Length: 308
Image 1 (cartoon, helix red, strand yellow):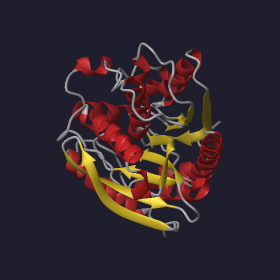
Image 2 (cartoon, rainbow, N blue to C red; image 1 turned 135 degrees about the horizontal axis):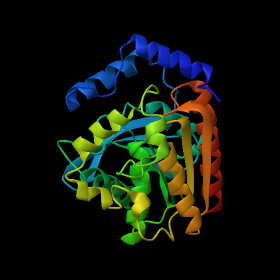
Image 3 (spheres, rainbow, N blue to C red; image 1 turned 30 degrees about the vertical axis):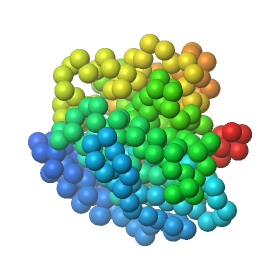
Image 4 (spheres, one colour; image 1 turned 135 degrees about the vertical axis):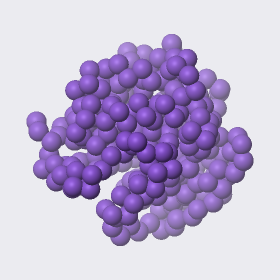
């Protein structure tokens, strides 16, 4: 089907803005541009019972997080959330809307992690920060009114990559067990060699050129592409991982690698649901696409938390 009507309006607006995620920008210029765009399309945030910015210990110093708590009686299930931005841009404000929505829909504590960004902190700084955040929430649940026996991870794009990677890290390091991993349009393969990379190379917000730019700043050398902490789809063993829910978008360069990762999880015996959103672009940036994704993922999280 064609790009849905709301998404087409957005793409037309971005074209009028002369928008490019990366282009010839420096990393800092891309971060500033992303914040400008966020402000231009911002609206009143959805209220949640409590929001707190704080820091927790990270591998190389203090790690900023934002903690969202719902109304109701604790302890609450915990959702650890990782923002997107190609490991180079993005911060705690980038996906504040998603975190607020999931807090209310699921009735869980959401801990959003402001992991270190490249190129100042190249691979594997980001996954190590995210794993450190998982260890912290599991060992300090009283500080966030959380239940350490019910922890899930989620993220969008590069954040989806990090959620998938953290699920592998905690299995391999005998870390805190996870209830569910929710991967929104995840990057799973540093080699970028699937058909959708070429089919959707330009014209749908995230481009192939953007992905090459992100990888250039994030990766130390081509050898990193073989590392499952960068390319979780290349892990030799996917058994024993947390159940997964994966959302992909029809007009997304990352569509195929997200779906292929889901299929590999299924083949390894990991309960996995794959949902391709027709007419959508990377990130589900309009209400007609984002709201159904949030409803479906909230239902999956609620069910997983209830049964754990």
